[in-house]
Image 1 (tube, helix red, strand yellow):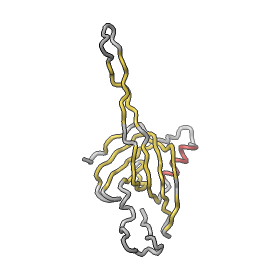
Image 2 (cartoon, helix red, strand yellow):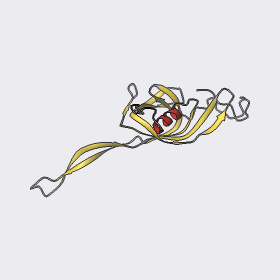
Image 3 (cartoon, one colour):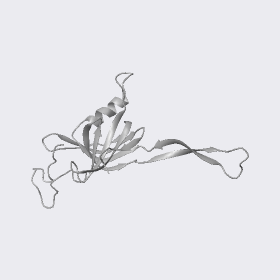
Image 4 (cartoon, one colour):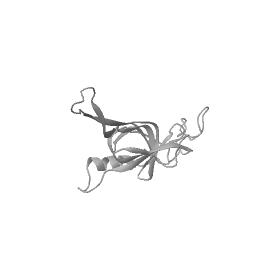
Length: 167
């Protein structure tokens, strides 16, 4: 990641500014082991098991509830910064795949940290995900390359697990 300039536009600190512009971006995101940016908010960490009703003949007092399939909420990443085009390029591949056999699904890792690029506290891996919605971007530049502010990006996926090595 590249650093952002301070509000005065010259890279000089003005009173009360935080040294690390990514301090509030506590979620580092990777797509197939490539770091793509940091985000302030993550939602959609939810799974629900559907149940199947089974009415047993001769038993009129109750209906059995049997486990069914799991469904997962969409993963939504909000208020992020990136200096890479990985997410944008992936969205374009989903919109218009270049070949019929191209697999648009990727694994997305979300790591909760004490501050961007600091100690990892928790993490999840979302299997076979692909983007279905993108909101943004707003553009800013500090002279060393563009930083793209992403309002939100939403993914569908086939389930998630806790990353190994996290509590």
